[in-house]
Length: 440
Image (cartoon, rainbow, N blue to C red; front, top):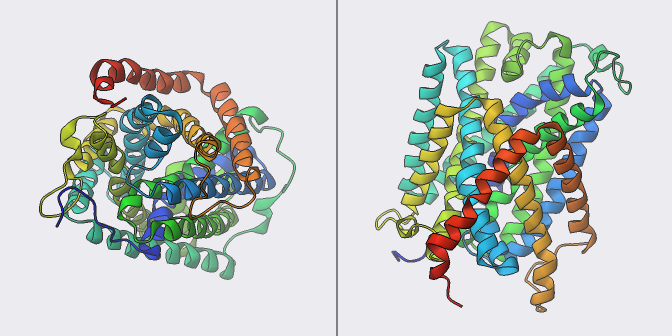
């Protein structure tokens, strides 16, 4: 086994499953209640889901073209390096390292522990220990081998899709809900929160639920026939996830009036209790736990490839670029990702961690899509895969991203500025520690 290069071991279905697993995580079980309460209109909730689906699909088509042009480990880091140079790419990697990747991973682990707490009540410290324990175990599995981690993700993805489909069929089929929960369908109640804040909260929740579609490109160096596999996996995954989210949100609202939701974090457990009593709440909590385990496993597999690529470019600590001599995985980069996520789990709550990373995550994903225009001008050769409807596709994404950034900053300026501040610290780090390593 080569110790210098990652092996191409992953086909279409493992790749698709990784995107789905990264997207269908704790978000769909945590955010629909809060979105429905703040928006106050089922129609607005449906529109938010569809808008975020369009954003994810257009963005994934852009990433598909970039991945087919640069089928190597690192994803957005590689694309920004080719479009804007090493400093911008470093800042993306710094943002991934310090803000986005550990933030998303820690948010998932924290959300999962709230469902463990629904089954086995424990102290806040106990919940944090459960979350950190899950991170340690899943990081270890990913270090042990790509193939084992990938097929664990495939199995758990099939399981979670199947369970969510069964929930929708049983929820509507048994007639245990009430169609009046969708009324008024269009108008917002008089006591609804202001529309600006409601839209911001709804878009943040939906973006978080869809977050992760960009992560598949980070493992392009380990995908077989990446120029064909990556775009197909991205498009297939976004379509499946969109249908799943709309049907799941609808059945939850059908089973439980929004006014009776006791906690956003245990919304799915409440739906389970409506269907099957107390045991149903426990079963649904277990489903959420398994779902999130699959998502954390996917993130711990995909995200560390950015640090690995940075280390190979000599703009990160050299030891992060090491490949395990026996398992063939970037084991040190995986350990860094898991360790930082565990630190965030100890320091913050679900909401605090979410607000910490969401603004800068959208900002850098949008900058990567802008890179499509730059790279097309720089490299006139057509890539193996070209997105349809260029330049409409990236323009649609960027318009939606701009609206989302405006709403995010207007609703939570402190958290947005905190994320920007942490990313800005990467500028002196780059110039003092790593710029000298870049070849002219």
